[in-house]
Image (cartoon, rainbow over all chains, first blue to last red; front, top):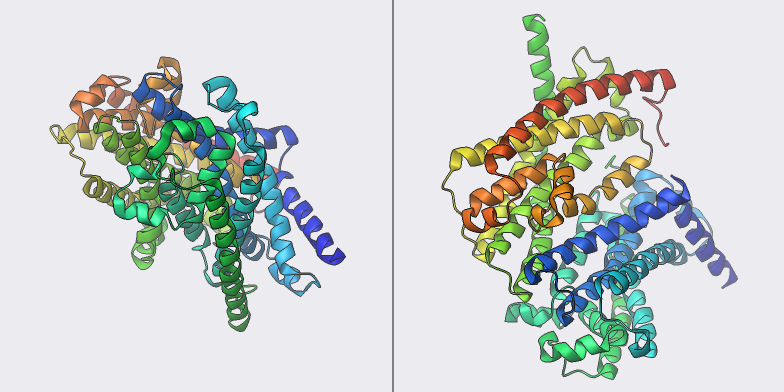
Length: 285
Length: 274
């Protein structure tokens, strides 16, 4: 266990160096903040153009918080998957990591941990920007901390585990890893009630929404962070008939299910990649 | 400038464009990744506009903006970053040794990139229009073509200039391209009318040719709503785009010469793993 923790810690340190040591800390911080903020402001301006500057509606807070939380989905999924591609294609160190006497799972999750940490700063700053500049409806007094923290931990675990499956797939693909990743994250963006409630979607799409764990995660996080907004929107969210325990149960079961599925996919891909000699495969892509 | 010099450079343009043109046919998976992925973002933004009861023309604005993202991404990743990647893979020194103008290599990259990106952007737009049932006005096709061509020439001229500037980057190239994605979508008004950012912000963003190109295309496709939210008149935007064409092509030549000289003297033209 101690060896595994050391692997996790060193992988996180390596991840931090790779993310940040190409520039000075100030420029790195600027890069880390500007991108997510700009992405959020696109939605803000889309909203403001139509509502003529009114940000006091529950719909605005719903959209803003959903988009901020979605950064976790996009960045963490990407972070886990990119470890395989980056180490194999760009730095050509995957085979050295492979033959080292460490657990590869701890290595990957260590690298992902730093991605979660960096993303958390972006999410936090975006939410603070929303609260103080755009009147997003979040108040410290009304936050349901137990629901928020449990949902956050479960959701991040589920996303990391999903990333593991995608990472496994990228063992076997030359250049499609990023596309598959963006595709999966994009499906969640459209169908999981990230920036609009799922009731806006066609009926057939709502059925798909209700089998995606991210839909339940978004709802649980919102109920923890902005319960007033969820109450105001009522049946518009399409999730009003579900209580918090049900949301937690779905999150726990889907995390366990994805754990088995992802480890299965990863092991299969790992074995296939070894047999076909793809562990140190480079395609100059 | 002899005939053989001209022919040699035309061949260089064709030779550099060839892998991009052929690559777009040989790699069918782009249909999924380059058309479906932008459509996911477009779909999300379309449903957001529906959620807030936006006029239906805004759905068209989003589809047009979503299609145009393909060009901006192509500029960042296949033009600006290209010479940096060529340096990493060892091709750059071969380009520099070849008895052709460096501008021909860049022009070839631009022609090839423009071909396959137009294919992708056109497909995204066509599918978006069909799926979301959007109507477009084509009352002034000549002006539409003029605006599109001027936007693309200016945009790819800008890409050629950035390719030289990126040459001396190490890992900053990747991060710089990453950084210039969402912020440019924001200030150039890819998904909402740029005029809503205020005159001076929109004027500053007009350095990026796609800002004016998008604004003009919206006015042409949606004469009523497009004009209501317009930043400048179509004719003025066309004139500015033509000026940008000349400026960027001139700057790309100047920056390429300067960076090549600087790279040679600092010994970084073939330096990898920075």
